[in-house]
Image (cartoon, rainbow, N blue to C red; front, side, top):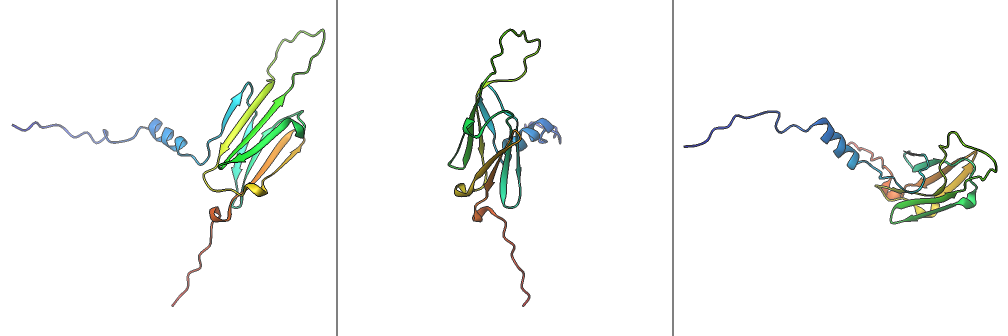
Length: 143
C-alpha cells in the first residue's frame, strides 16, 4: 500500500536568514582585513569606477603599501603608538600596529590607472573599471 504524506507549502520556502546569508555571500565585493587593527573602509561604485575610502588619521603616504593583483586590491599599512612618559590611560580605544585590507572586485578593473590620494586623514583610492565592464548603450533602429 502507498504511503500518503501531507504537503507542507512552507517546507520549500527559504528563511529570511538563509536568504540574507545567500545575498551577502553573493555580494559584489568581498572586503577582508587582517592584522592587529582594522581601519574603517567605505567602498562605492559609480558607472566608471570603484572608490575606496579609508579613515587613517595621522598617517603619511609612506605608511602605505597598495597593490593590485588578479583583480584584488590590497592596502597594507602600519600605525605607530605615540609613547608619552608619565601618563596613565583610563580609556585606550585607538588601535596600533600593522593592518591589511583586501577587496576583490567582481568586474575587471584597469590596474594601470589606479590612483590614491591622502588628504585630511582620508585615503581615497580610485579604481577605474575596464572598458569591458562598463555598461554600453545599445541603440534600437527602426526598419
